[in-house]
Length: 132
Image 1 (cartoon, one colour):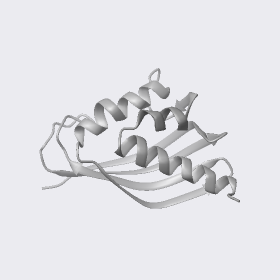
Image 2 (tube, rainbow, N blue to C red; image 1 turned 90 degrees about the vertical axis):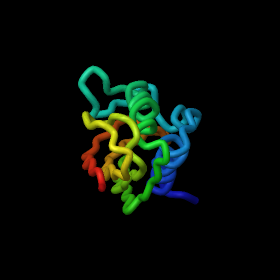
Image 3 (cartoon, helix red, strand yellow; image 1 turned 180 degrees about the vertical axis):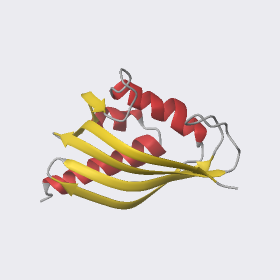
Image 4 (cartoon, rainbow, N blue to C red; image 1 turned 60 degrees about the vertical axis):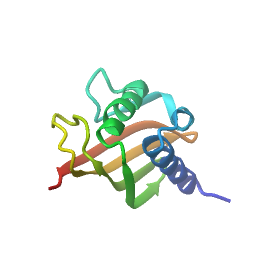
């Protein structure tokens, strides 16, 4: 039987692998609460729809060959912390930078709060590095 921490980690892994990497909108809808708040999103633009649009309209176009590496995932109570990196060819404007056509890495530490198997809140620290 899975513990709550294991179940929450599986939800976070699914969100990252199926929605962010593969673009599966059903995975997004099944893992994110309609009441979700992104505490590191722009004020007034930090709900579930804004988060979905950021990933589908900015992140994925910026890295059409996006890959994910999860270095650590730690869960306690209702939160999961993930240290990860997205890599790919920087092909469209992203985070106020013009595309270079060269490899880039977006390293992130995320804190996700979950309730009933769905994201309800998110905080993150990001470091965007272009290469070459």
